Each structure stands twice: as structure tokens, then as C-alpha cells.
Length: 57
Image (cartoon, rainbow, N blue to C red; front, side, top):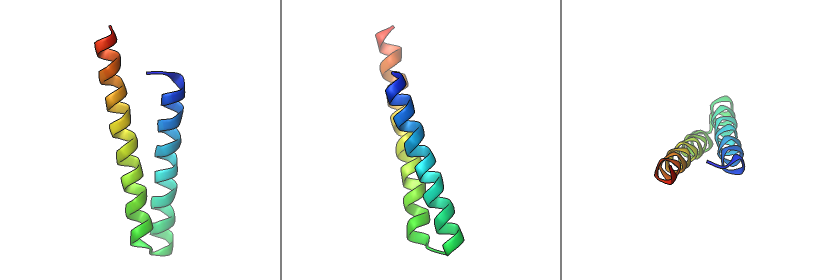
């Protein structure tokens, strides 16, 4: 996994956590759920990158 991909995924994860927290504080379930979705996407991208790395070796 490239450093740029790792950084991008981490940014997406942190952004998702921030959205989720904002949604919880404001009581906005839509924002909270969008944050959870962003975190899930980040996790899936990480997993995909790890699979690609495994096949490169």
C-alpha cells in the first residue's frame, strides 16, 4: 500500500469520525450515519489495498 493511499484512507477515516461525533452532539442522525459510512468506506479501501499488496509479493 502506498503512503499516499494510507494517508488518504486515514483522512477519510478521521473525517468520518468527526462527522459521526458532530452528528451525535447535534442529534443529527443523518450526519452521524454519513460519518459511519465514511469510516466503513475507508476500512474497505484499506482492505482492498492490503489484498493488492499481497498479490504483488
